[in-house]
Image (tube, rainbow, N blue to C red):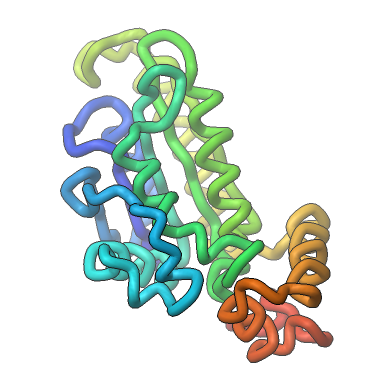
Length: 231
């Protein structure tokens, strides 16, 4: 299996260790990105990606390798420490750049068979909110199965964490489930329903013509469905 491992920070604290541990337990080839090193330029709202294509984004050269890795992987693991009850601003920049791959725009067939793991740690509170926010991003990218690992570490660094054994056991359980299905998943009713809602919207789309063409080319406005097309 191939794993894309995205760190919402560039230091190797508790979130890094939990995410990396989970990836290693799953096993396989790991391609790793650290933020803001991988991408630090904020979306400028120019709409070039909407009107002309993602390759016309002024930051395409930095975004494209990350998206390419996500599309070619079996499992996507994303970790963010909890900063003011939310994901890091550095990681949010990535999702701002990926919005054209959302269900409401130009979703990618490859996403509809993947599994994701989202990780967040906090010394106190907020990690559940962060993992829910990360899971929402995965859902709207079309990923059908997301495991959440919100972990209260009650420490400033990984060395001071006393719950390492419990966290490792949870990572073991998740890894076994993912490996047993070779990283594959199938969309459930919620994801299929949302896709059909977006399909209805695209039928009447007269403002984002590139989006509509994306759906037309894949026969999604007819009987085609991404979970039937993905291999």
